[in-house]
Image (cartoon, rainbow, N blue to C red; front, side, top):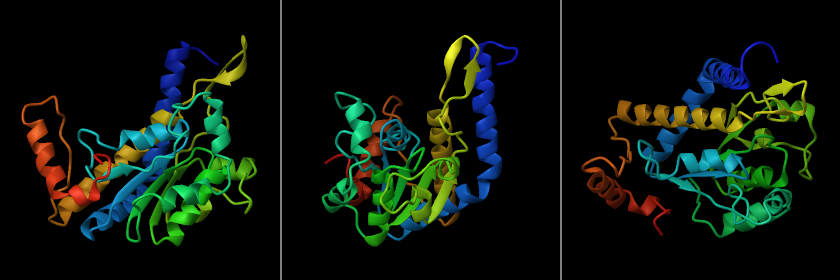
Length: 251
């Protein structure tokens, strides 16, 4: 590392990545926002899925103040964040063939819905099969991944393909292979991951684009308000009553 504290250097790295995503993924963000708006306008439902730490970005757009009320988490037991013990089991489950199909078969997804799949590497069986299975069932798929992994690693799916190969729209997080932004002579391994910061911002940019796209069509975006502001609970109650058939996190 050069001059500056580790904190300064991490912030610089994260800001640089955010600027790259803003500039280089602008068209994909607009297209993804339009697809989500199309889905809402056509009566479809919205789902988000991520395994391990990638699930943090998925959770960030579900039941979120200022976010779309229609975003639902497609959860796979044992792989949502680090909620399983031991945490390493979650990594193992990402490589299990057939798990995605079982989840989709028992989930409320149906043709006409859109599924956002977040996977930093995009190489494990679970996100690849989730994308394949979703599209086979008539869903549109938005993939959020680091395209660099497809060029520098090998797939762990039997097809030899990556998440990016089975999406209608791909959003590239620009994260380098290994997800560690800093190095220091006194520390033997790279450190300071930025994927959560960048991926979460990328998805929130898509959510903002979706809300604006709906408004441009004369459709009031089904947004949630904070329960910590006066009137927030009442507002949310009205939204959830109107769109109750498309909201699954209350059931």
